[in-house]
Amino acid sequence: MTTRLRHRPLTLGAVFLGTAGLLAGCAGTETAVVEPVTTTTTAVPTTTVVLTTTVGVSDAIAADLIFLREEERLAGDVYEAMYDMYGLKTFSNIAESEDRHTESVLGLLDSYGIDDPAIGLAAGEYSDPVLQNLYDELMALGSQSLADALTVGATIEDLDIVDLRERVSGIDEIDTVLANLEKGSMNHLAAFVGQLERRGETYTAQYLTQAEVDAIVAA
Figure (cartoon, rainbow, N blue to C red):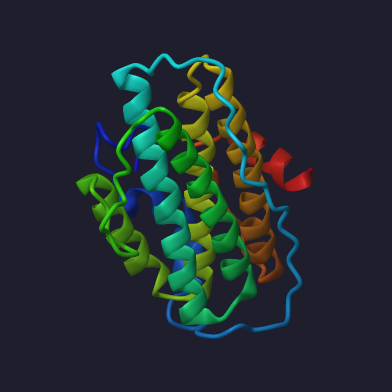
């Protein structure tokens, strides 16, 4: 996985080397919710995009928005699947938030006349083959145990934050949406890390620095 997924494929095996101890200790041992946990995730409202210009965006910005639409969909699809497997409410809560995220990006696509890459695709299906491979790998890893699934969730949000920061466009209407999505991803990252810590596990930063992750969790 890289912060520019369109350019270089992800090898999640390398990503998870940093959490090898977690996976070795938990794989296959935790298949249900082990305790009632109340997790608070701050919902980021769908941003209403009010364009101040009728000028279209560059091909690069359009490509970024298309990518983010699919990346946000991927996150929600993974979390829905993990909720079905483990029944942990954190996954369904965050999946609902991801639905709002992807609708926010869709609003930008519609406003700028950019075709939606998700048309005709079911959950778990993506027009970008790199994202399709990523989904398949994440599902395989998350299916091993609840701890693995929570680590997958934290990794997705870690990456999302970096991807959003890299795609700042200089266009106020777009960047307002991206800033709101980043806030949501920070909340989600903190929630997943918190769930791991309640189980005596830790999350090792993959894309942000560890100091950045620690600050997000402590906020």
